[in-house]
Amino acid sequence: MDGDKLDQLKQFIEQCKADPSILSNPTLSFFRDYLESLGADLPPSAYKSGDSKSKNYVVEESDEEMADLQDPQEEGDDSDIVESDVELEGDTVDPDNDPPQKMGDPTVEVSEEDRDASQMAKGQAMEAISEGKLEEAIGHLTEAILLNPTSAIMYGTRASVYIKMKKPNAAIRDANAALEINPDSAKGYKSRGIARAMLGQWEEAAKDLHLASKLDYDEEISAVLKKVEPNAHRIEEHRRKYERLRKEKEDKKIERERQRRRAQAQAAYEKAKKQEQSSSSRTHEGMPEGFPGGMPEGFPGGMPEGFPGECREVFLGECLAVFLGECQEAFLGDPELMAAFKDPEVMSALQDEWDNISLICSQLEELGMHGCEDLVCLSFWLQGYGSGSTS
Image (cartoon, one colour):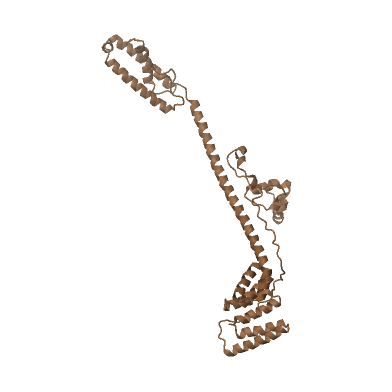
């Protein structure tokens, strides 16, 4: 392929990747059909509104025979389910991206002096909070945590100050630290629940606030839950709705695939059946209705229609053996015939007849017919025996 044309093709592919709606152009329908034939799953924007997106499954049958297998409801089923937005209430804040605050080591040994100093720093922090000096309060609480890093209350208190400062991520880090030290810290669940609500994490917030309410109920938790729970319920209903839609879509896809496989199997069976009937018809047409010249007197005329060649030879051989056996019994039981075979003139006539039989058999073999000597002999014998002649 020419290098310039190859570069143009690459540019076109890149444009399609960036904007699949290019493929909705009717002049590019051939390219879209080609992509689908390769199994590509194109986005809805690649189709004009009203266009149907269907994938045909190739079965070795005519279009009329497969028309009934196509489900008109399949149109559009292959596109992804686009979720609508959930209408939520309540204000949220932008996440804080400050560097993580200082944390203490909960494994260290804490002396009584450190505990007392930690409590003193906490008192200073509470005084700063009452005066609205939140940054100063954070400094005092950080000092208290470093002096006594085993106290869940210190982390919970600092988390509540971060909430006042609208720093939910910092509050969540402190709440997690408090819950690691004390898994039953009501202050830890409360702070984390409020912080998650500030970030719009409604379901997680509702879970934390319910746990905090069970451990240590207060009015603030109840007030926040009244704002959080409706949003959490809407999100849960929304998720269940689309999970159900996706499940229904997947079930329909599985059912269509099952019907397609069943249709393929049925089509293959019908095709094999037609081929078998066609082959059987050709076999019947190729067989003569009866054996040329008929059967000897007293035998059914002709062969059954469609008798295979090998069966015909076996049938004729058995008939000939039975007939010759009957002839032998008749000859041995007839004294006049036995006496006639002793007459030289009769034997001479029989020899002439045998020469004629040998000549006819050799001619038949040249025509591709073999093993006819007994049948020809029988035919000649019947001509003489049936007319009552012995010469």
